[in-house]
Length: 250
Image 1 (cartoon, rainbow, N blue to C red):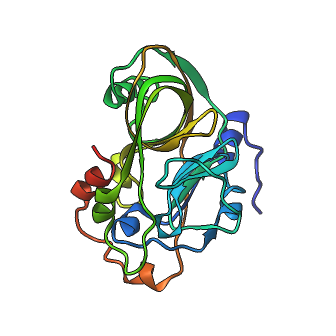
Image 2: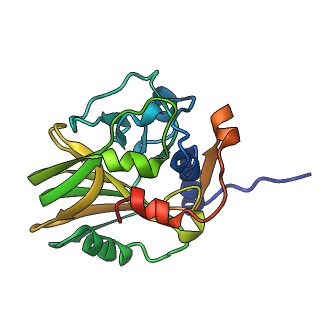
């Protein structure tokens, strides 16, 4: 006979806090750009996250449970729940800690400041960062058609959007180094403007004012893999660290 003891508040929150991930970064690097995960299904798994769409048709931002698509035009739109994704991550976001970060000259400086608020390098963290950005550089890529090139080739076609004094929200994750292959190690953030006129994958930024930071520590990752010939045939081995740096524009 087994007895199930009630979880304490802290353990209950951890049990409910799971990153749901569909697909792997390594498969995306190899050109697996079509999946069977519908946007409507994804939004049932979490309220904050990021990813992309079939054919690499734009950057995905999930904020407050809403899914946004930033195509190569740089103008956000809300996709149909039936639109599908080859790669995405979401989490039911409830901040465990909050803080204020002062002016930052660059993305890398911001990341160093965030490291001080997320001290465990071996856990996953989800972030929601709000404020006005003196400068912000974001990107999206054009939709691809088969036969798909590798992701390192696609990012050479990226459209880069330059913004000044723009107010909005950064959402995303910091993943530990051992997660490489599944996810991009380190920070991966996407941006959505408050007025929903701009967004994309974060490339760089600077701030002159304060940023409000909300952080969620995550110890559980649920991985769902595509059921496709493309995924089955992808070469998911070898060291792709240089490819990850290239596609993340590090």
